[in-house]
Image (tube, rainbow, N blue to C red; front, side, top):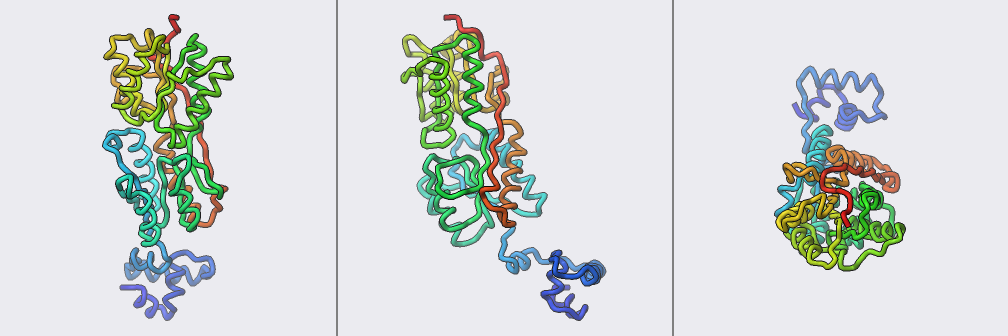
Amino acid sequence: MNLKSLATALGMSKTTVSRALNGYPEVNSRTREIVLAAAKKVGYRPNPLARSLAVGRSNVLGMIYPLQPSDFGDSVFLSVVNGMSDAVEAAKMSLIIAPVSPQNEQPSYENMVRSRQVDGLVVGRTRVEDERIAYLSRVGFPFVANGRTRCDTPYAYFDYDNETGIELGLSFLLAHGHQRIGLISAPQDLHFAYERRHSFTRGMLKAGLQADPRYLIDHAPDRRSGYHAMQQLLACSPRPTAVIVDNHLSGVGAVRAVMDAGLEIGKDMSVIIWGNVQDTMIGVNVTTIDQPDLRRAGAKMVEMLQALLAGTPPQHLQEIWLPVLLPGATVGRCRN
């Protein structure tokens, strides 16, 4: 039985029956009870596609993502996506991830908005100047940014506190007597890398130290570049006694470079990595700046997007969670 037949059998309009089935408040409780009882009796099940068309919603959320080969082995990315998947399933919605090439990313956003294939988007890898967020804000399309950016209009975002995380790591190294400290960063057009580097240089100045430009290496977003960045630091004279790596993917490469150089990590060179790498660095208890509850963070972004779709203003949907420092064996007392 379809909606029209159910309405005819009840002697009601299709609109009244539809509103009663979907819990609209303007339908009185007695009418709702009658409609629900009749629907249950005849085994009526609403057509999801028809309902989506009627309310102008697809019940689909999306991510447009320029996937890198390393993303498929990235436990952080996968944990966030798993949390998002749990949340959309609980809400009886769907999540699509559309992989695109970097040069086709912006056109893909514009096409997604025009086609209305999804109700809202999660925007990842936010940049300091982000054309995607500027565009979505301008056209009024619902989105939650996984990270922050410079934007003239209020927008919904979820992020971890980049400044506090670096402060935690730097303070830990300073407390162990380190003063020649290096930083390996992702590309500086990424907002998280930009914030973490500025926090690092400010923290060094606050400690009465000047960050050596030779010790600041960016454009290291993956294992290979992290490996080469650490090799570059090891070739400095004098070399740093400790290094913070601002992302877990390049952190794995950086640790491997120290080991391949025949140095004892935690004694000859201390290393802190932003992001949990314990599943990757088996047998090495790495000191990390950890982003806790990644799965819950993914679910939180879906909840925020649902609230946005329900009419909550974006300026009321801005969350920053605190990272934590997890001490490990890769940091020791400075020998010099």
